[in-house]
Amino acid sequence: MRRLIVNRGDDCSTKKDYSWFMAIEKHAVITEVGGFGDPQFDKTRCLQINKKLLYLLNHGEAFTQSEAAALLSSAVNLYRFQDVHLRRMFHLIARDLCPIANEVPLVTSLLLKDVDTDNVAYRANVIRLLCQITNDTSLSQVLKCLKEARCDGNPMVENASFVCAINMLKRDPRMAIKLEQVYPRPTDFRTGKHIQFHSIYLDYVMGPVRRQECIIMKVGCVDDLYMDERLVILVFIAIGGLHPGSGYYSGYTSLLFPR
Image 1 (cartoon, rainbow, N blue to C red):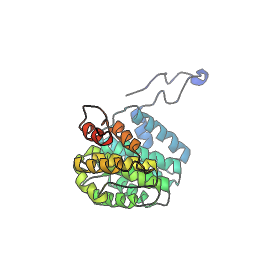
Image 2 (tube, rainbow, N blue to C red; image 1 turned 90 degrees about the vertical axis):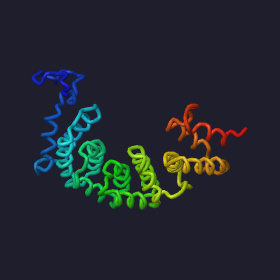
Image 3 (tube, rainbow, N blue to C red; image 1 turned 90 degrees about the horizontal axis):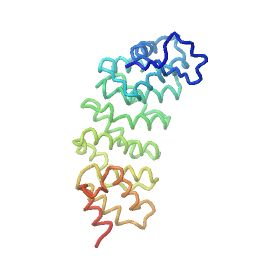
Image 4 (cartoon, rainbow, N blue to C red; image 1 turned 180 degrees about the vertical axis):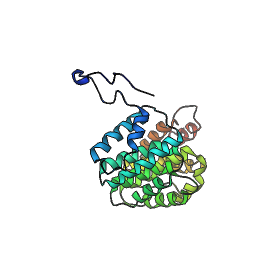
C-alpha cells in the first residue's frame, strides 16, 4: 500500500503542510531496514528508518511472514547501538512483527537477554513483549521470567509481569493452567494501585474459581486502602463484566450489593 499524497518530482519546499511520511513505500522501507548492519548507517539514519517502519505498522500496512522475519533479522543489528531510543523502537517493532513472523530465534534470544539487564525500562518493556514470543520452545523460560518479575520489587517490572500474563491468557485461555504455577492464588500486593488493578484483572481472567475467590477477598476488605472495591469495578468495566448480560454481573453484584 502506497501513501502517495504528493508526487516525488514535486518541489515540496514551499508546501507548509508537507510531511516526509506522505510518500512512504513498504518495499523501499524493507530495503532500508536491510541496511541496518551497514557500518555506515549511523544512529540518526536508523532512527529515521525506524520511524517509517513504525508508521507503516501503525497504519495497518500488511506484511507477509517472510517479510516480517526479514525485517526482524535486520532490526537485531540495532543492538550494536547502546541507545535507549533505538532499543525502545526495536521493542515496538518486535511487538508488531513477532506474531506475524511466528518465530525468529535470534530475536527471542535478544529479548530474553534484555530481561536480565540493569535498565528497568528495558526490562519492563521486554516482559510485556514476552507474550508475543511465547511458544513451546520458549514457554518454560518465559514462565521463569514472569515468576522472577512478579517478585522483583520494582513496580514497573511487577506490573509488566501481570500485563504479560493477561495478554497470554487473551491469546490462549489454556495458558491458565501454566500461569497458575506463577500466580498460584489471588494476589494481595500493596505496592500501588496499578499493580493491584492488573492483579485483580488477572484473577478475573484466570477462570471462574479464581474469579470467585478474588471477588470475596477484594469486596470483603473494603476498609483496606489497597483492597478498594472501586478497583474491582474498574476491572469489570475493562473486561465488559458490568453489562447486565455478562456472566460476571450477577455474582459480583450479589456480593457487593447484598439484599
